[in-house]
Image (cartoon, helix red, strand yellow):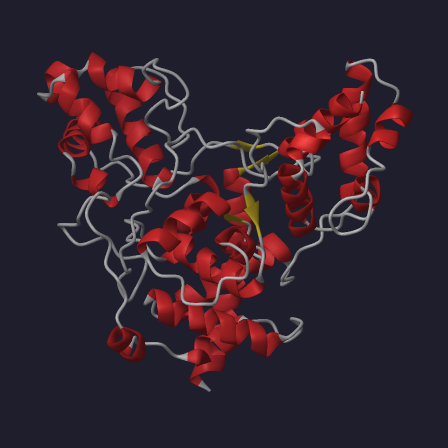
Length: 404
């Protein structure tokens, strides 16, 4: 009975792990890292290395000479933010180490995401987290015909921090606390009767809700500049680490957009999702097949070809490409290099000609956001527009303040 109740808890924690849907794209092993241009909204240079190429490493001289100004950063952080100077210092440090110019656009983009994801809380509180957790436990207990009192009794076992697992659930406030709880349960898996191969399901965390997987991959190819407290996973839940990895995933890549709105969409849906959604729209128009405009071009969950792949194969003759070449180019979907691939160029050349005009090269990914923490219909488009509103408000106050 104890084993069953704890397995139910594991299922619950996995369900509460994040607000974004599970990614349909390939796992992040080594993120493509290319320092952005001075203005992040400009298109990338004509030739960029694929993600398999060695990522550039920061040098001490580069850190000293990076064009950084704290004025825009200071103006972007609200006056009412708790430990405001600490936030300014962490953002400034992240920009320097990542070689991201501290323009008003970059500073306000980062500030807008922080405000949206955590309202400037280093370890954001999830309202009603214990109630959400116990509700899911009760739901699963009923499914397995186990009385809730029996489940709660099994969770009275003392955990490594001296509290019982039940007490820790009752007092959960943040995802960092949930992450630590699950780490303790993972370490005690054998004696608790839990699956020995279970993985920590907490996928995002910190003031910018950064993917732990992204942070771990990033640290492998771009040296993490701060002392590591325990693990990179733990760093994600800190303010300094959360801001650093948040700046990296939002700004440290060359996005082919004229509007920052699409970087915000990519932050929510995955890098280059907005570019890929526009490609899907052009491919759908050209092939006559209805496609989900979600920014995911390949199916990594099974061996079945994705809708985008099938659509491209259906017009392979018109594209002048074979199946192997199409597959090769689609595998670049999460990299800058896809924008220069033969498939991308051919699809847009034919679709533009068919439409009699240049079609958009960026489109909003159509993705519904799912989580026990979400009580109403939310989408990637809602997220991007919400953040963009905060971004525009920040620009309005940052530019005059920095110039005065």
